[in-house]
Each structure stands twice: as structure tokens, then as C-alpha cells.
Image (cartoon, rainbow, N blue to C red; front, top):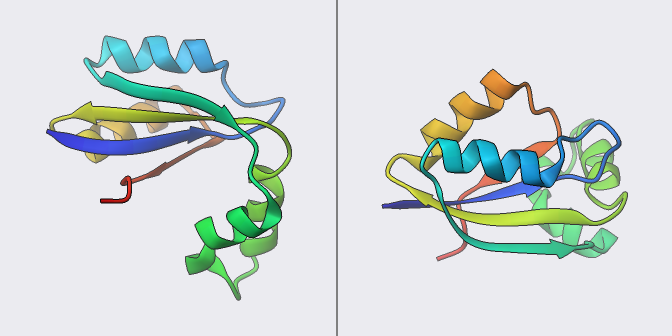
Length: 102
């Protein structure tokens, strides 16, 4: 089984979290955990550290710290590829996928 972390970012345009969960369950994802949290600027900068020094860095940090986000821990064989397909199909623009820390 592959695990992944899906963040539904705070935005008026972001999909409703329950709609995201329903779409994930329809694709047979196991929802291992769901938590609402608000990141500090320092946490956001660490999360997006790979983008530091690019033009995308400040907008990414701003978007993820704009309010509470939903963090979903997911499990499914080939989770990352299935998530990529689902995000494209649903046109979710305010979600971020990353593998969870080991």
C-alpha cells in the first residue's frame, strides 16, 4: 500500500473538504486521518523549502497560511498516481500532494 498526504488549502475557490473525501472514497482510498490545522509562516516556509528562491515561493506560503487547511492522510496502492489523475479530473486547484514523512 502507498500512503500520501493531501492538503486542501484555504481558499474560497477550494473544493469543500467533504466533497474531496467523497471523491477519494469513490476511488477506494482509505482515509487514515483527517485534521484541520493552520500553519505558521515558518512551517509553510519549511514545507515549501524546495521552492525557496523561486517566484512561486511567496505565493505558495501566502496561500497555505491564508487560513485553516485540511490535512488528509491517505492509503491506496499507487496513491500518488491515482491522486494526480483525480486532481486533474476534478480540476482541484487548491490541493497539494506529498508523501508523508517516514
